[in-house]
Length: 181
Image (cartoon, rainbow, N blue to C red; front, side):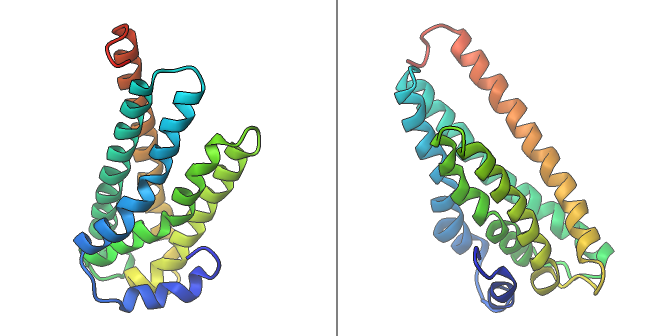
């Protein structure tokens, strides 16, 4: 999915699977990478381990929720772009396209270079999402970009919502004074 996504999408689209299999065998392990590194990063930079664990649990939970929400939105919108409603295909599409950014989430701990590299991988995830629109979601020819941009808008809004909510929750918890750590 990282090196040759345009070759991988037809293979992924043809694989018989379920949301549960994708969730447990693919999404959970990859979505856990960033939170695991968050615990270590927070613990080694002066914050309490409790704060790091709380941050990681919230980050992981929101990642999983986002995948389901965005897949739901993609499945709901796909007919408007000439595609076929298929909740498993939508879940595959969003899950597998998230691979670059999940792998990149470990780079946050790299001083200076980590955040720009993560940003590059997040942008690459968008490209991977676009590449999967036709083979996985079966959108009409020429509508892949519009479909991807529409879903991406929802995706970005969801990610911003997660960031705001996560920041608010962590601010509330750390403001309680020693509640977590």
